[in-house]
Image 1 (cartoon, rainbow, N blue to C red):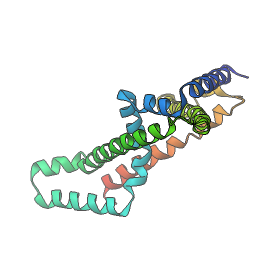
Image 2 (image 1 turned 90 degrees about the horizontal axis):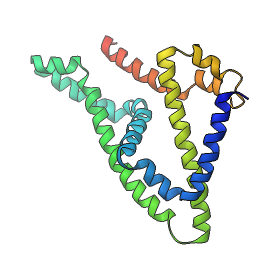
Image 3 (image 1 turned 120 degrees about the horizontal axis):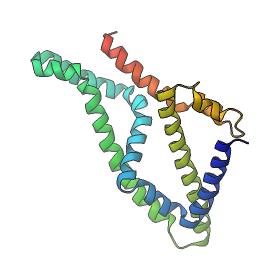
Image 4 (image 1 turned 30 degrees about the vertical axis):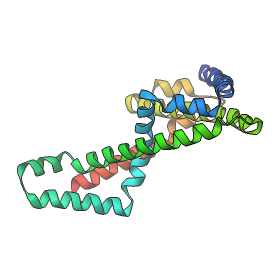
Amino acid sequence: MITADVIVLAVLAACVILGAGLGFGKVLRFITGGIIGKIISLVICYFLFGVVLHFGFVQDLLLKFTTALSDNGSWICNLLLSIRIDLIVFAIALFIVVQILRKIVVYIIANVMEINNKAVSVINRILGIALLLAFNVMLMLIAFQIIAWISGTDGAFYTNLEGSVFGLDKLFVNNPLNSVFESIRMEVEHVGTGE
């Protein structure tokens, strides 16, 4: 067992204790409130960006938007097209939609989960643990991706993860977020080359 495995076990124990103590409703409110809520919305947008971008109606709207700008032909429209204003507008619209949906969903779920009932209370505690675990896994994946961007997937950090009981070395190399980033990069390059 390596040091990273010990850290994972400590985080796991903390998630079980805090998640059971606070319950799903309070954990959900904590995670989605204030600046953390905005960060969560950004992360959700990051996960959704590549998927939603390929929806047919989104592609149609973006095409109409870029066509209108290029038909105008003014220097400002050309400047906006060169900085990929279509993707910027799409990202902002997606963020606003996610923010609104996040607030509605959190309000409904948190209130339902805090009903004073023994069965709901047990479910509330179990889901509190699960949510806190999922949140920490998401943070770990994001940290892994940032480290991979900086030092690559075969650098010194990877060496520290080799032989992990929990397979952290494999997770670092095969991080699911890498495919999200790759799809965004390919979309930008594809549209940038006009292919």
